[in-house]
Length: 179
Image 1: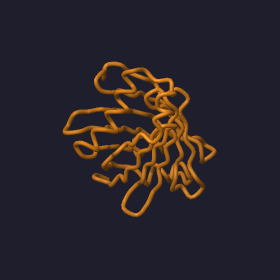
Image 2: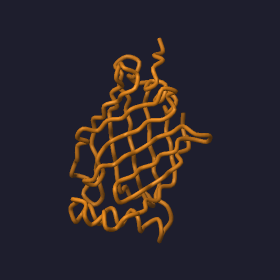
Image 3: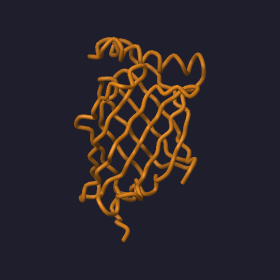
Image 4: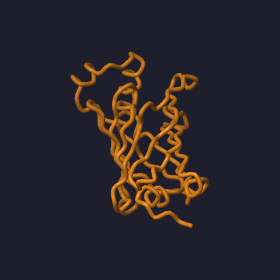
């Protein structure tokens, strides 16, 4: 039986592996320096904004595993990897718990960052909500110690991800590489 709630439709449509070019830009240096971040997280943010300008875009790869347990348990497995020349700069692993109200999604998971991949950060109170047509999801989570607002929208040719903090913005068009 297929569940036809918006949050189920959104993640079912996004099942598979995806890839796109990521370029993060620091848009407000004053807000960047005012944000409560560690020195290492500041260096990570600066490097993620400089590397694409100097060496070309970073590669973002994601996977959405809807079919393993979404219909049975309401859970979707999601992974994200940001890399350059094979070197992993960021890795995220989440379980997305689809609420029965058809809109809300709770996130459980961890993040790891270069150069300390052995340090694991939890997601805290991360959550998402999906619009009524099931084509757009809005996430609230934390990235490098700062609140991150992310939108995922199904568009012609893939999924457009927009990530914004008070000091940065990144947009990537993910294209399906494996169903």
